[in-house]
Length: 125
Image 1 (cartoon, rainbow, N blue to C red):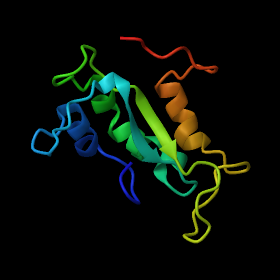
Image 2: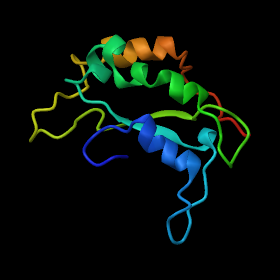
Image 3: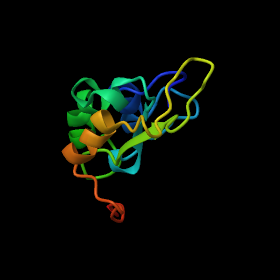
């Protein structure tokens, strides 16, 4: 997770590529073994407007990013959301509990990405 902001494909790609210039070197990670972290706050497009949301903006990358030295399967495991339900009141973030349910953001994303509830077992390869 990127400090104080959602992640982006640039942040996630460094995990797929590894960090060979670090000492010690950090090997690449298979894309289908990690999630992209995004914030879910009641006053963000991720919650209120799926068509303008980060999950929509980065969907193609998350679905298709190719391995680069680890793993065989393209596509990340998916998204993980931070700060859901009751994010910081100090910054005037809106909660994601009724009546603010994120149905126009996450609700539409659930349909778009065909999220099954309860979730199926994770991929094994």
